[in-house]
Length: 90
Image (cartoon, rainbow, N blue to C red; front, side, top):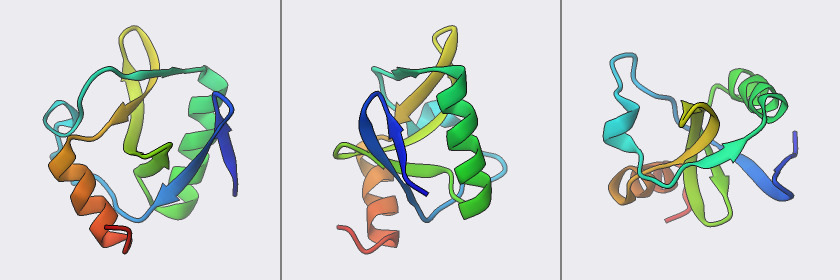
């Protein structure tokens, strides 16, 4: 499934968040605002692909709620490198 968010392709990546994760330890700001509709589409793909991570532009992101709305959350450099390596992209 192809997703476009803010006119930019969003590609699912292999990898899921551990049950005891703290997104604040894995992500960096600024977050990227998305609509409720975008969030619902991403959540559906996430569930279908068993993936919590996506490639957006050149950044590995997760998604959720933040800053009073729905957002894409870029991963920190070390977390992003781990996900890219898992997907054979590093």
